[in-house]
Image 1 (cartoon, rainbow, N blue to C red):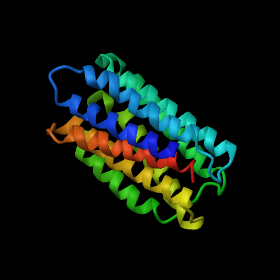
Image 2 (cartoon, helix red, strand yellow):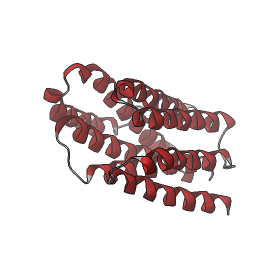
Image 3 (tube, rainbow, N blue to C red):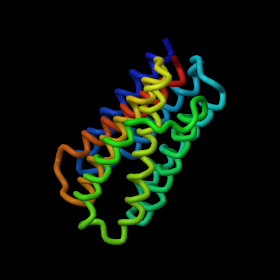
Amino acid sequence: MLTGLLTFLAAGTAVFAIRGEYQPTRTHIYIFKPITTILIILLAVQGSGDVSALYKGLILAGLLFCLGGDVLLMLPPRYFIAGLASFLVGHLFYIIAFVTDVGFVWSWWGLPLLVYAGFIYWLLHAYLGKMRIPVIFYITTISVMAWQALGRWSIAPGSSVLLAAVGASFFVVSDSVLSYNLFRQKFSAARIIVLTTYWVAQWFIAMSVTV
């Protein structure tokens, strides 16, 4: 019951945060964006699924660093690198979580993810300027996260593993659209796509702790 309530509340605050992205003031974003991620963190905190304490702790650490990234990216542009770094650390925690039980998986999922990552970088590289190296690190990290989540699911199928793999896949979509909108060409629908897929990704990863 608590899982359903937290999910409902997170969905509601997400709607307000996304709506705030299209308003002239950013008040709703400052209030509801961190609240949505906090509710998803609470979803993982109260989870009592069949996962190890280490896995749960690593997922919570990843969620907390992503919350830090949420907050930093709401601040003036000079905090952008710090926000990117916070998300990067969060993804590293996710990678460690995904390899705790089955080790590093050299699955065939790496090939399509490598091709996709290369395509995204090809779209962006001419527009990155001094952000080229940080973006390469970020693309690599999130691709490895998705690779390990999907590879883990391919050799150890189960509800928790599947939820984590779906969440990691949504993260790839979210960050791809974010990068395209940020560095190459802005488009109006980007904000709703990015935030929706981002919170769906976090919800699936948090839920991997509860089942």
